Image (cartoon, rainbow, N blue to C red):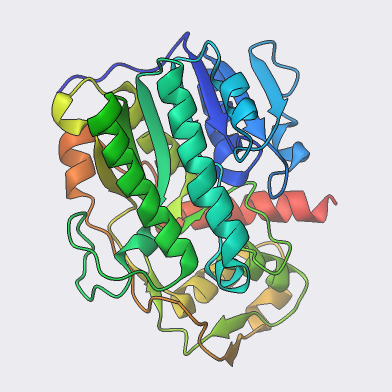
Length: 331
């Protein structure tokens, strides 16, 4: 298998003002690409773009993937699409399945069809580990899934079906990346649907007791942002014909419980504030739609894409703790 890095390409990142999208934009710009960001700022943040907004190779389009004209405008002159735009969060999808479906399925189909209509060859999109649903097997292997446990999970599986169908009907090359609990710099600690790691970090820094849903023995394959950026770049650049029109797990292949997560965060944040060592979590009810254990097999991504994690859980968590401490304390 040969690999060629992306450079001097015109690239679209949908949801480029979001957590994952902005990290991807920054990395692609650093490699000498021209990057277009399409975002409606429903969950993305302008401050995520601050380090590269003035880069002459960066273009921001304020628009919505549910508007087909915005999609066509964004793909104009583009070589590769990274589709990161979505409404995340299982609880949000349970509360409002209509909007989640409109964005995650309707927006996805519009974006995919616009790319096809513009003659774009490669379309890399954010899939989700939630697709595994109630399948009990561990580690999770790409071709063994169960029934989705939330509207969000259904939308992400539907995207995979559309991508597979469009690749067969229209010849567009699609690669889906099933992210496993991504974390790292720029992940938003605010709001009702904040991801668990930034939420816990903020609570600990504020000397509040983190609330764990359940007994704390739920486990996740937490995946540092740099691994996700790498997987996207590998997926976009691969010339291996066997790697195209596939879905891949993007993770580290290791599981950690929420109790372990809290202990590690106390260790790392306690270096800046000793009082954090004395804070203990509160245990609440389990969340509806939650999977108890999640662990990925990354063998397929290793074999076909050449993916190897750059940064494992504890190192990524330490880097994240330092980033949040610096950023939250300067607000």
